[in-house]
Image 1: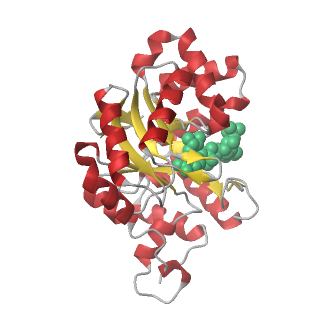
Image 2: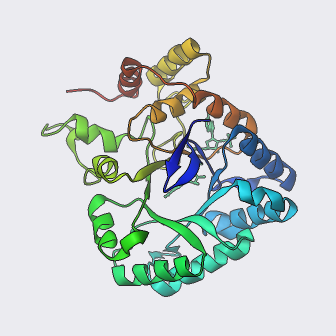
Length: 304
Ligand SMILES: NC(=O)c1ccc[n+]([C@@H]2O[C@H](COP(=O)([O-])OP(=O)(O)OC[C@H]3O[C@@H](n4cnc5c(N)ncnc54)[C@H](OP(=O)(O)O)[C@@H]3O)[C@@H](O)[C@H]2O)c1
């Protein structure tokens, strides 16, 4: 597994998403986490709301049974989503982090992200919360999720050394809006619509790591595009190129993300060790420039 420096942490290029782990038995979760660690996938993405807290609790139970493995892991969680609203108040952030630490059974998480922008956000409140969390040793690094550049700029004006080092965004072969607009600048077509304020270029300029979420889902969790009859051309191209490298189409879909020079860290949500192994194997493959574009256009996108 290729690695990179994320805010000074030695991080794997692929992370394990934990949104779906509450469907596993304790034995299955034990197998998934231990296999991930063997493959070098030691970055685990949580959120206080996943499974209504159950995902962090299950992970915490694993850590209680395997305390020596905590030191081998990088843990990330998110906060700021409440039923029916988003809340970046200092009181809520502090309360949410305490809940995550309690469920995970740890004293610190390496990364904390603000899950979805709260338009009523007061940046001074966020700054106060982050300072308190840092001082208490509860969080090492901070970031955001689903934020655009101006929202990050506003926050960063108040965050000082706790400024965002991560933005987690939806991105995959079938969700390419952050790339489409940059390939269609000034055109009258649909691809030219800039939906995110140029977040790809903002993050590259600022050394902010983009973490693509749902790298296999089309739409908003509508299902995996691998093997889907909605994407026949893409699946044919994935099979063709994957065959060249001796990897699977699933693995290639991640190699496609990793080939982008923005050095993104996809958050994979599979809970099957076999699939994670396919992905880990492909993460070491660097596809060719022309293959990257062939896959992009096979997903239904056109170049002007
Ligand atoms: N920041 C945010 O707003 C946000 C939003 C959503 C998710 N996330 C994070 O991103 C992570 C990934 O999200 P996700 O689970 O929706 O992403 P995903 O990796 O795109 O989807 C994984 C799901 O697709 C299934 N799947 C079926 N065929 C597959 C194939 N060929 N290859 C890969 N997966 C296949 C998996 O099943 P199996 O388990 O059987 O393999 C699993 O249920 C989450 O765990 C969470 O940490 C963040």
